[in-house]
Image 1 (cartoon, rainbow, N blue to C red):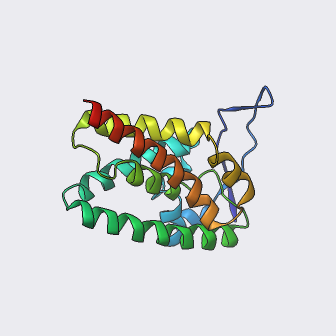
Image 2 (cartoon, helix red, strand yellow):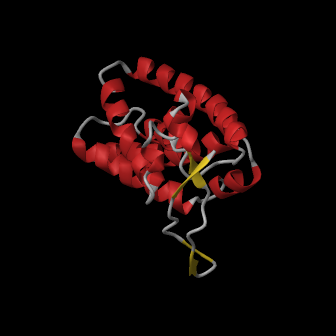
Image 3 (spheres, rainbow, N blue to C red):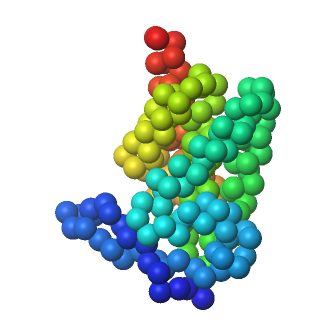
Length: 177
């Protein structure tokens, strides 16, 4: 069952501001898989759920950054695979492909962004900004994947590529500095 709560799309489409996004499923608060897929509940925030989904990734990054780069990489890969499965499962159960509130993909994308990043709040903030830019802008091939791959793999892949683009820029900046 879908609640009356609706997310608000703050971005313009075809020159018009749109507000028609699917309602938040009530199951987010009853089903632990749905809760996780909706970014541990932050995907239910009605404005900019992707941004809040990325913000919730920061504590995950802070926790994982205490481990070696190899451990961080392995956990990120395992979490990515888990997220593909979870996005596919939840999309089928709520009958909405890539619901705007499902923001576990932003967590994956941010974790990828921060792979091998230098530690410090400046880098954490830069990673956040870069990932959000690439996730919203969707340069090639992110936009094509987002539109053509309508499954859990596509939902995670577009954010993973945005994370890779962001990671590359962070590594270049770290090398230059």
